[in-house]
Image (cartoon, rainbow, N blue to C red; front, side, top):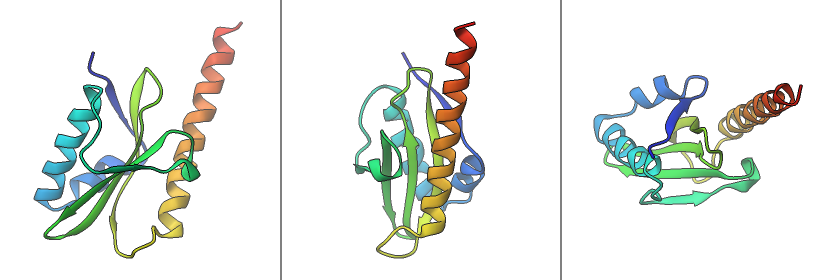
Length: 117
């Protein structure tokens, strides 16, 4: 079964702003994930939220990242897409990721509570 993708905040617009080769690579990687397969180059980043994964896209135009959460059955949540400019991920990007992660957790908790009544 192919999972739906749920784009959070500006993540889809941000991905569309990537250079063509980075966009194509990201599309391929997201198709892999939708089919239950791992991306080619990735790392788990649980410091940003349980189950958060970062896809690494190194292309001629630079280094780009797609950060997602796929641990829930209903969807693959794309938390953030950005150009990586330094060795370390910027505090601003980490803040965006953590905020969107927290929003998903709150939404899921609210839905689960509504089902209980």
